[in-house]
Length: 186
Image 1 (cartoon, rainbow, N blue to C red):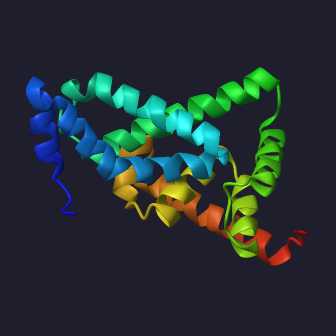
Image 2: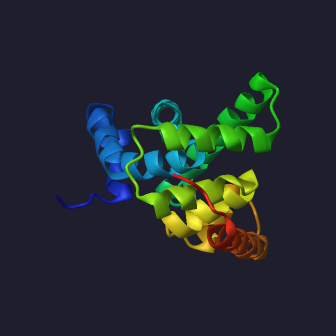
């Protein structure tokens, strides 16, 4: 199926008669990408599903106000990222748990999840990512998995390109060290 251009989606969304069709096109184009972006951050499938739904509810409510000064998917990624960070922060506060304990909890969830179907190396990579500070993990995921350019990540996170490059480099080194040195039993 041919991908619909963002401009066509936006044009259809502004017309009340074709708004539902436009939103379905938008979901078809971006829902899976957004799901995996969120899932890599929260690990849990059900949490990711809930956050995807929250993200697209916000997109629905605010798409009319979208100014096109950024790309549509960058705008959606920013909403998804903010929703996810808010969720993780609430989870830390709700449990009154330090971030490293939340990461350990997420690692346990990953191992026990029936929705994770990766091999041992993929599991170890995900565990390595959970050792990263939240912002480094976010940047690593956007660059490595989502293959976004630094400029796009900058638009999403509001961080300078130079700082993003430094964070990504540090994250890569930490992941490499973890992958080479950690002996994890499966």
